[in-house]
Image 1 (spheres, rainbow, N blue to C red):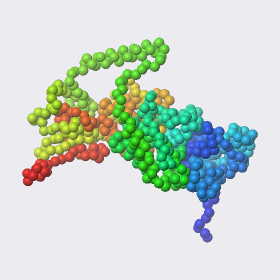
Image 2 (cartoon, rainbow, N blue to C red):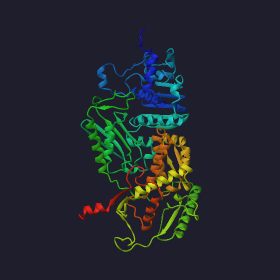
Image 3 (cartoon, helix red, strand yellow):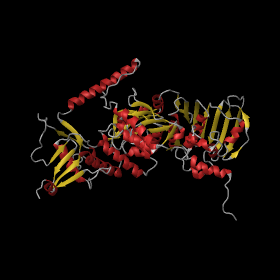
Image 4 (cartoon, one colour):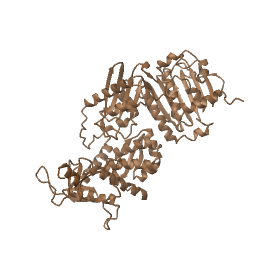
Length: 606
């Protein structure tokens, strides 16, 4: 008996669905791309329960004839390619003809379509591969496809779906990837009856970016700079974030080729090189890159979800992207403008104006009080020494004030004779030892000690926090909002309390005491980026480690920060409390040792 059989059509579609339909966001991507290929100028995506219960996409495109509607759900049925040569000139977002068949094999599907020249629409329903009859119905010009109960007959696939908020985050990400290059398309996204996005068509890039990511666009819009070039048959348009807008992940790096979102290692490398010397090694710039080039110069048929392409001349693409980005950045004044903490009062009624004036009077009175009470020549610093009976708080949270004498009127102040250390370039500490001397990176050493303190503290209890006098509000993406909800316990352990403050807006209520010198909003932005990127991909312990690495780096003494003799003595003394301080949490050395014998060899004394 033959062991090899030909799989039936439904089994073929199920296998194809495993490659193409990974989660609800995959369905949204395929259906919206079909709407765009059909010539739609407006479309609406409606979601329920993160896409698990319902995904509906309605457009005003060209629609389909009755015969085409029935044929559209057959495997490998498409109107976009007809012969082998067409694969070398793919100008549409979809082309394989397997998406609709794959979707219909794992869900309940209802499709209604009508062409502009027809007075009647037609409808068809499919239940996990079982196709019903084609019937006439009422409907507007265009196509509406509803997908219900995704994976309801394949529980092994359905159990891998995440929470509704997590799946919604993936959907909004796919929505953004499609909406960014389609700026002349009206688009809407609705979830559980609530409108998340209503995008109106625009002729420029920055308004569409502002509609999708308002947290990236300041009031003046100066944080994103535009550039454009058209050379060697390749047109490049880009929005480049200033270095101050950088993030801890590449979440806000979007690359498009002829309207298609892609990931490409050559382009990613070009972006990184363009910002070389302008950003720290562990920071990622915000970049929106749009490339237009002949369809024959790349192959899109190399990945099941078409997220990767193969350029026939990747070196040319790399050099063109690097050149236009680097030239624009080097030609821009990247100095950070000083900003005063004052803000204009918006127009308000008399009652609100009075309330605002009262708040200002209270703030001024508090500021005057602290100004009068603050001793002269004092500096606040971390006290990392052991607890004393006089102060029972954990050592990592105490503050010590140290009298600093007025500086001498000379260019360089020599340490006292008994000192065995010297700060050089306000970044490194040279310390004499019995064997010779060591050079210490002050930032790396302090960073390691803060990391160890927070780690040991979290092993026992939550980090101590302080409530902000005036909560700071900030905007988030849907993915970031989902990350806040999914990691609320982790945020509590870190001493962070975030509360809803409006549509896609949260307020920072409490913040860790140990991070008192770190701007709360800046830290929360980077923390949410980290949670979105790695929250579901790594174990909780590893995620905590990444967060503590970031927190210690931000709170530590900075390179270029002048330290007093007392501060240096304290830093070096606290070093002895820890088992190991040889390397910072990122793996960089904190100390380099030099022996007397090595010095004598260099000076020819031996």
